[in-house]
Length: 313
Image (cartoon, rainbow, N blue to C red):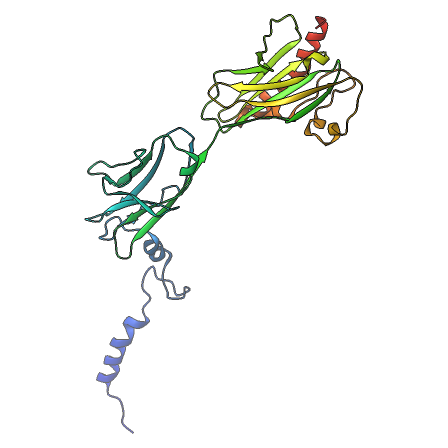
């Protein structure tokens, strides 16, 4: 057997010491011995790179209203000499390339300022057909794409209980018109009985209107006390700048048709104490004012009919 010399022992020791000495900040608990700091650096996008990438803070959904302008933003870092394009998802039509627009629809245009990393697709007077996906693409190989979904809200109105509302003679008529998806509250809401607008100073009397306005929803309550047979007919809610919506009111003289049980107005029957039924639409408010406005409308729906009755309306 050969005996190892002291020189060989020293050489082996010099080779093993670096392998056995722990490196500061490195933990052997992970699968590859990586530290938490190493993993953070690996997961962080570099500030400077020769490969373009999309801004991670961009939103993937956007909401616009019919007739209003919609703007879809795309921010690209480290663009270099690449080009940014916008593609419409439903027909894969190329809308813009760089700063140029390639569509005959004049409502579309691209906005970009030199020295910035944002390319904005602007759609003037958005329409329901514009709803869908849009892709912001970078001319890399392969192409990089960021998808945005555009939701187009169309204002609409409804009268609770439509198309037919049944009330008993001498009871309170409570019509509730709810306007949804509004870009802003309407300047006014008019009510019509047949082709005649309802005037609160008319000889009929006993008419009141309560309106609750919110950022996206407006609710109008029409209250008519002591319903008569002449109050029957079509009632129309006509907000400013929006399409009108109607309901047909039937005034019954002691009758109980089956339609009253099937119609959604069964939730608004005249109670025994003579007060008008409370409508859930009175709570169509939002945020911190939800409870306050709901209670105010509910209280008004109770006090207004009582006041009308005190005046003999």
